[in-house]
Length: 142
Image 1 (cartoon, rainbow, N blue to C red):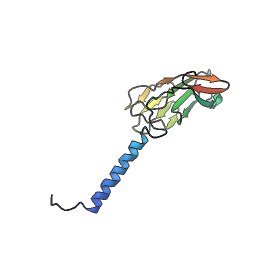
Image 2 (tube, rainbow, N blue to C red):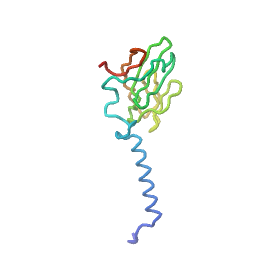
Image 3 (cartoon, rainbow, N blue to C red):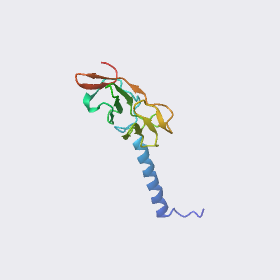
Image 4 (cartoon, one colour):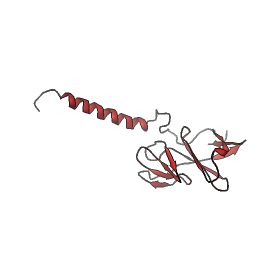
């Protein structure tokens, strides 16, 4: 090395890369309201609102609550954590039967929790869900 200070362009390029890397960490941060949680399933009952928000044969992502709920054609609901089992990011998109993780591209069957596409290798954790008074309640009973 010649001992000369780094060129302004080199310093700025390094700062830009560091900032971009920080954005990726923030998306999967435990500090983020919708980032990964230490416990990916509810430890107390969670009111998801009107039970009819998930129609027969339908699926709904409750992103803020980190849950995905499906209802079969007979009306029975199933719920899973919407937190990816690979790096903990919360699913952002549901299409047909697939839930998509925005961080590394994992896909999950939102009706079974099973991994459809990696890098995740572990299914989404199952969450108890029930109807009470016209509302969907996820998690353990109070």
